[in-house]
Image (tube, rainbow, N blue to C red; front, top):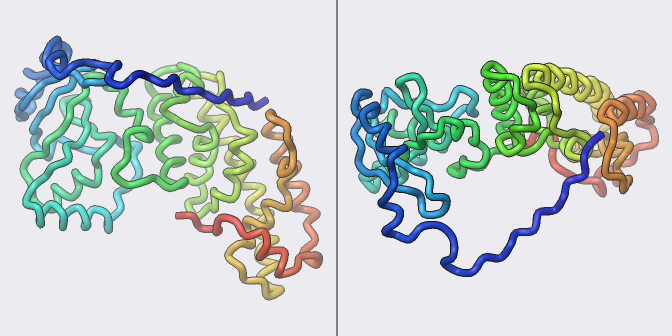
Length: 315
């Protein structure tokens, strides 16, 4: 059963009461300093070391050979138009002003935040890239929280999340729920597995349901990934029936881009429910049953217009 989420109240802090003073950021950087010989061995240069002013964690500012840096393997594919825009900006300013974030991994460097900038510099023929090197390697799995250079859409978030889960599952057997921060939402995991099987899935139309019925699992990650694949198959089975309904509605002359959201809303058994926990399988089974009984003859064009929601292809 899904657990009810508790609202988190942020405690108001007095101004300038948290973290380090400017002078303190320059002291106690031992953890970062210990990585300096490794950076130099890899052909890079340490430009500076400091402790971040909020949490006091050590950071190195480094210049790295660009061929030593690569995106984390579970990242979304870069957007070619965005890379080209960054190339234009860098060329116009004749400066690279926004260091990427990296962690050291097997004598190379992974960036969980900065792939578009990295690709832009590569295409421009740059020899080196400036980065903030974080000693803690687990930062590589905090990609959704870190990535701010180009907002993720639902498909990208979901695919990255299930890829992260697979990568972490190969490293250990911690429970899925232990990575709630990294994964953000359990529905991303289920939808990610669904997108892997059906890249053109209109996941946004199912997200409103999945956010209410999905939950992080207390299963070890390898078993949790298998469960995500099973849940994804249930979603895809419903989508198959929804596609059949949409095709029949189109054959009757209804061509609205909101047909799929309209159908999913109609078969959603918890649409008007005020309950806070649901059984995942039960809800999906009810949706599949409702789709099987859907009467297209009772659908009017004005009903679809009034029920307009997110378009089918959310990107």
